[in-house]
Length: 509
Figure 1 (cartoon, one colour):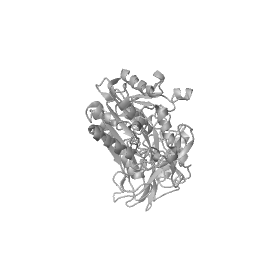
Figure 2 (cartoon, rainbow, N blue to C red):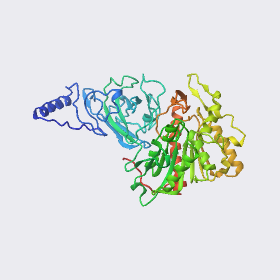
Figure 3 (cartoon, rainbow, N blue to C red):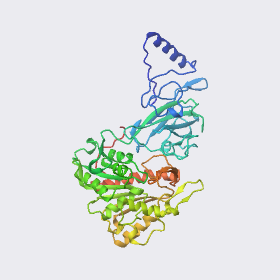
Figure 4 (cartoon, one colour):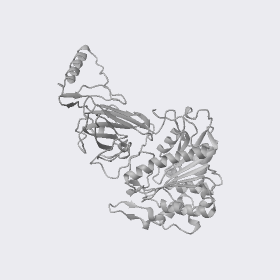
């Protein structure tokens, strides 16, 4: 809720001058509002905020008093929770407006790489002088209609940004900081030079309080283990594990594992393309690397070794399916595969899998915007069993998450073939497929900004290209929210034995 915070002055003269300025502003005689300290969830009076300043917790917009018919209105902006997890919904409420007043609500964020993003929507105040973003329809902007979380999933680079940007949190030990601001009128540009009526800072976290982040280097691994808060598990002595393998972009990606730990799952994020072994030797890891990761989890004193799941995204799907079906060491309780395929040389290592993909590089095509499309590399789906994982041998529940407009992997065709294989083998009861029309490849946690195409560094040449991931903003965002919710239920059912293990929620951190 927006409440000015009194300014702390050092001398009696300064306090007297400040008092006179406040009195002048209250009478509408002061053109520049008084400066006050910023606290999370409140606003500060002072100089305007530019796009490049939105990340700083000490930055906030100048506030312009709203004058209607000679009267000064104090606009009230409330955003709840002001500090929460990234998959929590926001409630944005604007009050004390003149009835029917047109206004623009804007979210602004500056990434760790310095690029600025924003989203905005147009509303008209109702008869009570209120706008409720969760219930009222946006009349225009970066989204339209009733979209409670549109200010997050429709975030996009500000005009003039370089092409190919994608928002991904790198340092998950710090929050994603957003400035939610309200402007008079229906605006589409000029925000940096404008003066808002009200503004609130909001923090969005991947790590809940009490989640522990533990680097893992045992057995040559390059990984990060996230352990849930002890209070989250209540009387449970052991954590259940989701083991995550990221996609073909390489590097250790932590945000999904951190968020899973925030929901009670001990989670290991594993780097297998740019790990220490590969960087030192120039060689790719073999299957034993993944089995070592499994053994590490099995032997961890805070992990229930008989209940381990594996989650693979994109190329990580290939690893997950290979381990689940063929490994004599890895015995999974369940598996989740997002935007990937079972097509690969069955007897091959990671290096042979990559060589198999590269052999088909002549099937790469380009969009009309010169964006790379790789989905044809594995098409048509082979009939030779030596080139696809025999999911008919799978013995644990499998959840497939598929975007039907995936331009990077042939995920839809692969899911259909896996379904047919499992039906013939008689184990289709283990398969759950979530398939989303007009969703693309990058199915991220809820409310993550949509990227239809972005810069991508190839694994072997490390060349930067712009890859077309596919999808449409609204449908893709719906898929992210729905698949995340159902994935958590799937993991709880198969690891805890119940969809709701009775654990405390981290709402309002």
